[in-house]
Length: 89
Image (cartoon, rainbow, N blue to C red; front, side, top):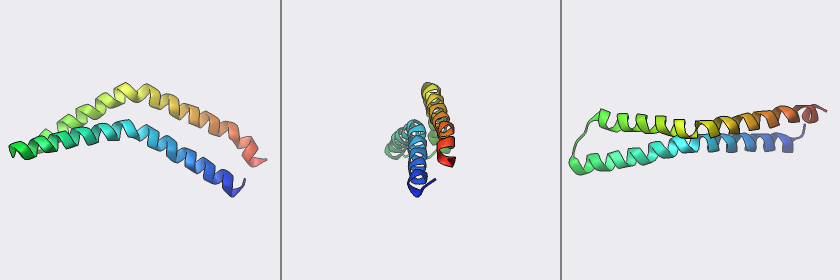
């Protein structure tokens, strides 16, 4: 196993992690920004007003993209396990 192979596996791992976290993080970011904008315009400073919509939005994002996330992770893991004999030999 060379340094190049290790770096390639690490890059693939980081890309998969980025792909899997993007839908949830983007949803939380958009909802958080919208709620913060609403709170600053109305001067309502309530913690649950910011937390509950984010929680619901992230849950919906996980429901919508969960199948794709699982498929992506399974594909990556399968490809990684298939590479083990070539990496050791």
